[in-house]
Image 1 (cartoon, chains in turn blue, red):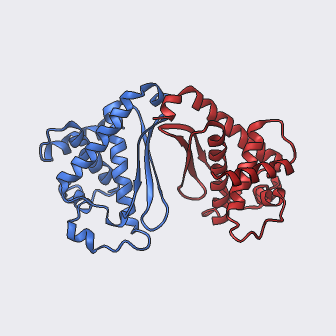
Image 2 (cartoon, helix red, strand yellow):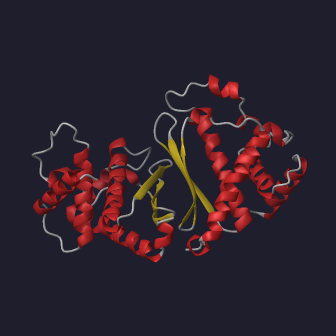
Image 3 (cartoon, chains in turn yellow, blue):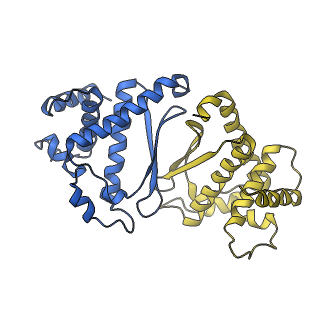
Amino acid sequence: MANGEAKTLTANSERAPGEPAPHRAAFLRALVSLVRAEDGYGAWDSKPDAELLAPFTLTREERRAIPIIADPEPETLHRVEQYYRAVALAIEQQSGLMAVPMMHMSHEGFGRVVLMVGRLVVYSRTLRDVHRFGFDDVDTLGAEGSKTVGAALEILEQFPEVARA
Amino acid sequence: MANGEAKTLTANSERAPGEPAPHRAAFLRALVSLVRAEDGYGAWDSKPDAELLAPFTLTREERRAIPIIADPEPETLHRVEQYYRAVALAIEQQSGLMAVPMMHMSHEGFGRVVLMVGRLVVYSRTLRDVHRFGFDDVDTLGAEGSKTVGAALEILEQFPEVARA
């Protein structure tokens, strides 16, 4: 990542509500940076981070209203991918080692996501009902993302030689 | 795997041309068993293994004749998946540890496949021009598959504690 971009991330985090957990801020910053990276023409430059993260939040009622038949919407799948790419990016920023996410959807909102660092699988999870992917609010989004980052970093500390293999 | 199925595999391998390399026979046996597993009504029971493996072979000329634009045919993608599932199955039969393949295609025949055992990535490869997936003949198919099985088993021996994690 270029230095300039890293600076923007720091600036973004200063605007975000202060979080005590370091992974939490790192994760939300990573996610915002990935969303902003898709804004090639700068149309969202004036939008606050919270607005860009809004599509990642769904109230319980909104979630229930989404049918879980057929395949999830492409926009939903894209958000799930952004979410795990943000986890990977935060892992990379904390550890200095490149984390690679890989997601495979089978049918009807079922699938699997893994995060790999070198030869080490630092995170693996079965996805289900992806149609309803979303968090109660940005706080929960940050908390869940940072929990995943933290869990992955713990595995990384356990087998550092495999992560570098 | 049930005992009955394992016996069928052995029977199949006896019919196949004798191979000196153990991984080679194991791999081809695994691939045939996966192809036969999709034959729910027994329509292929009388077909020899070689006939079932024929779709995995393409001559150089046949390969060249396939355009590598747009996405590969679903049948082709399915064969690539079968191939790596056979590698995974052979790894499992040799090591006693479950190997999980995961394939992700992006666009235009590019993608990635990884094979995981526990927390260990035993194999990882970038796929390209998947449209033209195929081997010169069954011998080459067996040789390539067994090479992958062997390479994965070597990694497995290097980090057994990660594979069991």
